[in-house]
Length: 244
Image (tube, rainbow, N blue to C red; front, side, top):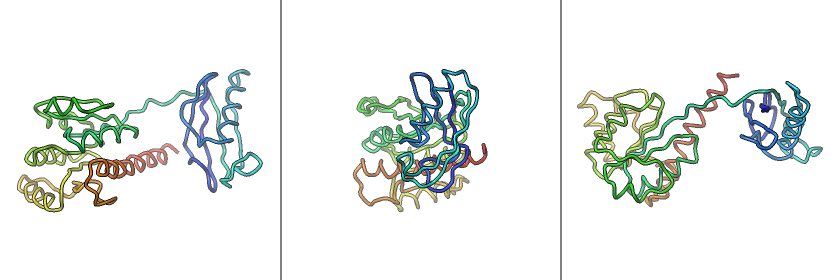
């Protein structure tokens, strides 16, 4: 297996430094941006496999000469390496109602382990294409979560929402805690949380509100997914900066 890594990127480029793909004789995993650049890198990687080469370097201007118009320049480092084991964040979606059933599959396109959680088997049975968990004590899922995980609270019961949000915030180490609702619901929760000695400030409520006032489940899900995608992307970029 050959690892192809963008070790330097200048100007306009399809991916930033740190992006990787992995090439075998019959398979490619990941991407460095597609187009002619990627085809050239795959060809060179397979030459290395055929010739038993250990390392190579490509300095590629992204201009008309290779059929790309980005205008930047990338340096590729090719070596024999395997993908690093990736520990994905969990996204715990509490509530398998209309919004939960729309949000869970939307989040599944991100590099997240998504679980849709509810105490109602009939609602979970309507979910498609996602991992589900039936439990009478959903707060236990928050206690078992890892630091940096994501919790989105969308249940059918305001009291349960408040319980779960309090449990999530009291940990102090989750990357995102969101709760469906209005500004009024947030104000009510803030009073409740302070009474429990919990800081309500990190709570995102309403969720997805930066996108649209449309209250259809699919739109709430789409803009909440975008909200979480920004968080996941920023975390990934920070990790790349640390690696470099």
